Length: 423
Image (cartoon, rainbow, N blue to C red):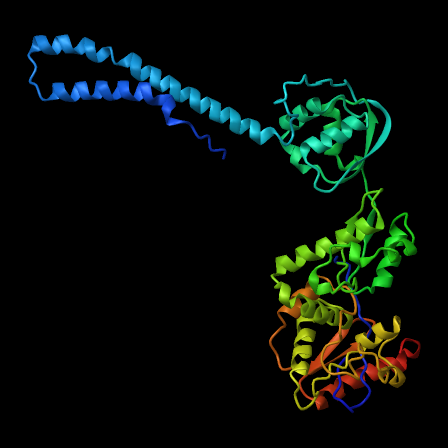
């Protein structure tokens, strides 16, 4: 909720969150010199005869000589056809090199392939971005398939092979390549370690969710140095705001650092999809985090973003102060109550938007896609205030003047009277 400086107490409901969530083959022209000169000679011979009117006898005598040209042309055509075949073969080989073993060294290739569905159980991790030959090598090293070559052949024969997903799979010992591929394409054999990180969580809360959904401890995530992660420059070396909320299927052997990097990478993809320029990313994420903390429903977020923009413009009613309760909640790391106290609003933290005009120095949570889009493209409007009049349902009302806002605020105050333990 928003309020003018020096006005009545500013309240809003706590942030409510949704579970979002060619080969070019160059040839030396010298290879064709003899044939080309022969062809030119034949062509010159024909052009000389064209200037001479032939008698029937001469024409009859000439026809055999024309027929004798065909072996030369045929030879040239065969030569060109051979070149095309060679080029095609080279191109095809190049296309398959990523999944087939290198045969150029002249070494013998192991093509061993087991039969049947195998026995026992082997847990195999297929990492993110693994290519065909890498998958084949992993399965061979784990004793699942007989050879890289055999599994590569199975990959080439199955058009669905490109659908293999990274993750941990329950495989068997000594499976046929076809059977092994079948398991990799069957979701029931893929171990799922799904963790849902909802929008609007602080870093500390995110670590708790990750620890609950994996075999790691909160301390394991806290021990990860942000300097060891590939964060966008906009993060300024901090995780807050840049651990993108979504549902993640982490591998059973994934480390805390790998999991955090996956979340960061997912956020980078979303920023790119929305079209946020790198130079604007930090400001957009900060705004989006406040929008996320203030709103519950997707349809309200663009309006909340507009309220922020209108207040930041420094109009006479707000003087550039955002006065958002979500920023105070962040300062005190407090959840579970609507609004803020007068004492909390007096805190001098740079994140307290009651005390400091403009945006806080950094994000206050990890915003989802809806909030990011809202902050990047706010809905047009003249609203300067909003209040969540019923925090239990998330109903939010917007106002252009303070008098209108006071009417809406009364509804919130009545809700607090009816629910004193939540205000």
